[in-house]
Image 1: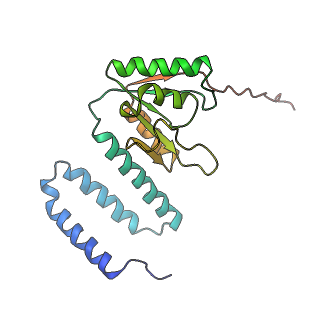
Image 2: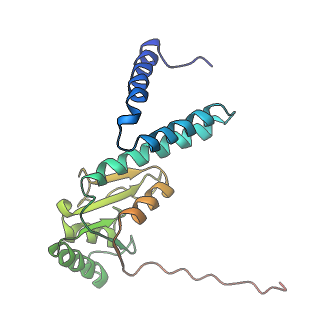
Image 3: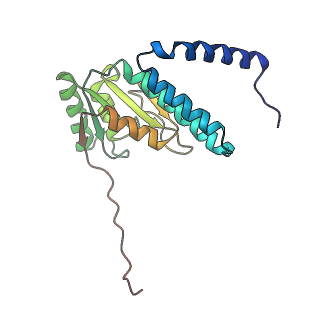
Length: 192
């Protein structure tokens, strides 16, 4: 399979890498950048599968997008709102989530949701787009983002659940749990 990297792309990358390596000692977090580059170089020397590299590349893109969005709000406290994606607007819990989001944003918090429907939609609605984040997940047959956060620059569409969960954990100062779907599993007897 021929290499899809053009000579011009390669030359540009080499130039940028040379400049960055020369500046490493001057970067505030130069040692961490050095360690990341060393890790990538060690990985490049291994015979990893194409899928391994695709996962790494997509995860890094998820991380980059999350870091860029949250960097501007790193000193603002945030509350994650979790609950059912299937509750309709007329449900009491949906209305309570709207009121809760309005209350906490009035006290200086921002709201984070999974950007879907139900309780997530209510959280984004109550907070308003200016005071909320949507951490959506790209699934082939599932949710898109709700209309209260769709198109906002604080909507992040993650490819992987693990990168999405990382940002929920990293950025959340508090968690609000609203009703969701409860699944009951019947256990088979051990002697069955």
